Length: 89
Image (tube, rainbow, N blue to C red):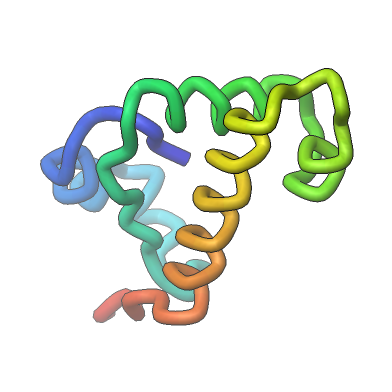
């Protein structure tokens, strides 16, 4: 998952050998939205801790704004997955 790098990183990724070698196995590409620095930080921290959204949302050690940003990120990602852009072979 790319949390930073802008939209150009997707066209560059599609040119890599890893992508080309595995394109037939991929359902599509999720193009990440531009997020604020705080949202990127919260989502990256969640991934680094190897926890799911629900685990982080239940964590009372996170403040309300961190949890709210994760709610917004989850909603955005689920919407993107529901509308995934299919890869044209």
